[in-house]
Image (cartoon, rainbow, N blue to C red; front, side, top):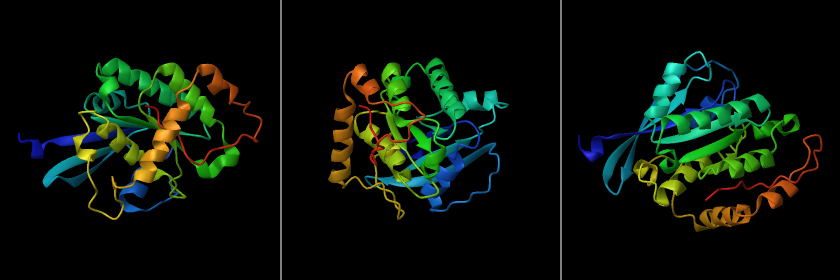
Length: 238
């Protein structure tokens, strides 16, 4: 099969009702629907132009229901990149996201080479937050996770495109599995690489996060306190 005929798969994982489908539909179609319908498995296929060659990318929206373990295992073993989603309003969804990462490590010996973005969704429900940003950052530090992290709101169209920019950033950094995202999108929602201010912003955040565990934890406050300063810009771990 020629390189231009190869399909490259980005798999979106997370428990039910964390907004996986809303995120994909916001990114692909710029639409949002609050009505919940359980996903079994949806596949969105898109063509991209990479230096004049057509590359095919599959975005796989997986079931949040744990009743489909075989489907989940298959999606993990066939993925070229991952988006792991939890809701900031659900501690349980955060714990399930961590289990998914453990499963990826068990199923994929090359997991460190696969681009991955961890997504805290539903920031429009800040008043119902159960998972603080530093909870995630502490776990990322302890886990030695080398991907990226961002908090988003599909409802408010906040930072959704950054998820895919962060995947692009990892591919630009040398991850050989994500060639199809090293490109500009044909649609209006462009993954434009010509935004140096955004790349510099992420680089700055990454440097700020490259500090000791004690400094990270000193910045974390108990969940009962809402006075924590939430930076608008999220952290990319490099």
